[in-house]
Every structure is written in C-alpha cells, then in structure tokens.
Length: 200
Image (cartoon, rainbow, N blue to C red; front, top):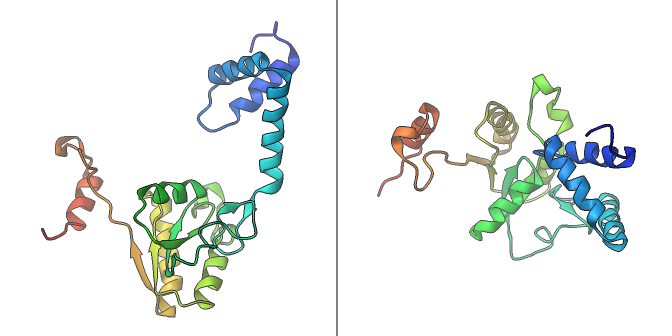
C-alpha cells in the first residue's frame, strides 16, 4: 500500500495478503472494508478469528476439524465405519459431503507427501490412519487424493502400508468431467477416462 496510508492499515492489508488466493489489491480492498465496519462488527470479526483458532482442533478419530472431541461424522453411528475415504484436507470432506452419496467415514491427512516441500510421511496423519485400521473392522480404504504427482505418490505409499493388512485399497476414478469436450481434454485426462471406462 502507498506510504501515505496509516501503518495499522498497511499491516492489516499485509495480513490479508497472506491468505491463499488473495493478492495485494484484494487485500487492500478488504482492509478498507474492515475500516468501514462498525466497531462492534470489527470486534466480532476479530473475536470469530480468535475463537476459531483457539477452539477448533482435529477430531481424535478422523483428524477432520471440529470444536468437539469427535466430529459430527465420526459421532454418527449411521455412517459405514467399514469404509474410510482418505483425503488431503478438511475442505475435501466438505466436497464429498455435498454429494450426499458417500455414507462411509473419512480420514484427513493434512497434506501430501512432497520431498521438494520437505513434507515427509511422518508429517502427515498416516500413523493415525494405520492405528484406526488396526483397531477396527475396516474393509475398504478409498484413496481420494488429487491426481497430481504428490497425490499419486501419497496414495501409492499408503496403499503399500495397507495391503499387507488385508485391506481393500481403491483409488478414485479420474477422467472426463460431465459436459467436457474431448478436443479440449489433455492427454492424461483422456488416458484416465479410457483406463476407468465402465460397461453400459
């Protein structure tokens, strides 16, 4: 921000700019918007951030974010605890829940294996997944990591750990999106679409 702005306003914008997907221009707009809020609204906004940061933690079973000991999904005895869907982060759980089709439970890794970024398996919640599988009647683990190099490497690593335990390990099917046009699809997407084809 320009040097003519008050330092606290500049600092506020710099904090907004640290958020993912927020550039400096958007950060400046957010900072100015906060300044237009009433004092009560600004305090409520700040308190909501502090409250979320101090009260939200990982569910002791699935590692999803919750403010209780167990998240609502792990606390729901109607869910199929024999099937675990392994995802990269809590946002992925929300994406699956929006489909209203998946009835199993989840396990959140909080990242993917990435040696370049110094993210090794011990920095993820893999140990907790193995403990869950060993201490329950899990029959299938669905690897639902993204189809990236890191996502594939993480899926393969966990699969190799689970296979000796007699657990069925599956991978999400990847391919063409609904409404997609073949000529615009990249080679990897087309290959995955062919590889994961189903009989009709």
